[in-house]
Amino acid sequence: MAFRKASALAVVGTVAVLAAGSVTTASATPTTSAAPAATCHASSGNLYCGNRANAAIYKSPRYDTASGNPIEIVDSLRSGFSYFKCYTIGQPHGGGNSIWYRTYGDDNGAWGYVPAVDVWTPQDPFPGVGFC
Image 1 (cartoon, rainbow, N blue to C red):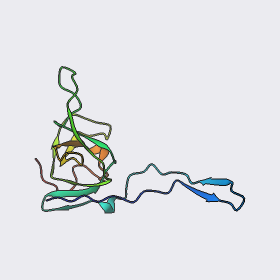
Image 2 (cartoon, rainbow, N blue to C red):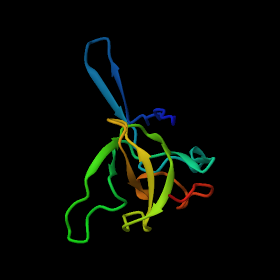
Image 3 (tube, rainbow, N blue to C red):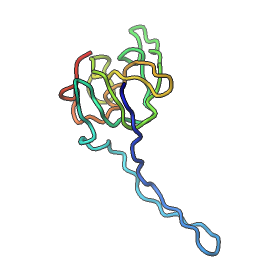
């Protein structure tokens, strides 16, 4: 069976309580970059990689049908690091390509597709990952 593990979260602020009971907040600038490429690896044709937490998993590798109706969202990736079975070619997305990765969700285990824009790969398709 595949595995999932939670990713570390970036620190975006610090709160200190002073002796007088007041609260002081110091903020750090959050980073919006993807996880380092070193977090991705392929093994036996499968991909293990960082991803956007709470990413939608679609029933098909596209956002909508030819008639414009939305494709069903079957599950979500709640974790920030996931297993992907393979890749396929689907509808273009915001990542500048048409690669979608097949995986199962964290809520009910439903299988579907995540657009590569939500997977932190340095290139798509990721080398060593099988075609679905």
